[in-house]
Length: 78
Image 1 (cartoon, one colour):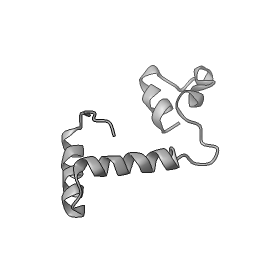
Image 2: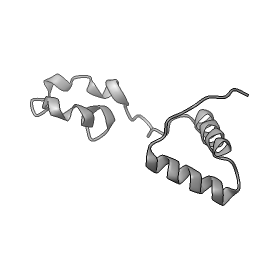
Image 3: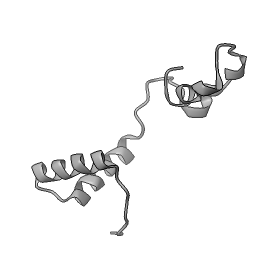
Image 4: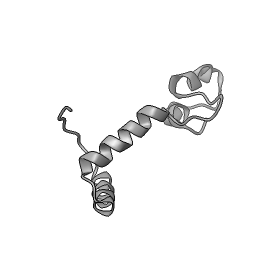
């Protein structure tokens, strides 16, 4: 086993601490379980749903697209 450090947002820390308390496990154990589950199942994407940069293909041809909309194109919405 390896030791590492991570930085958590305040709300992440609060939820993690509460989950650990309720399950009577350490925060480290909860993180390991969550990570293992993610590594086993992989990203949750809809069938045929494009991700990230692949959704941007042809975006410059869309006249309604403005530069301020790039987050929608990358992370959802378009």
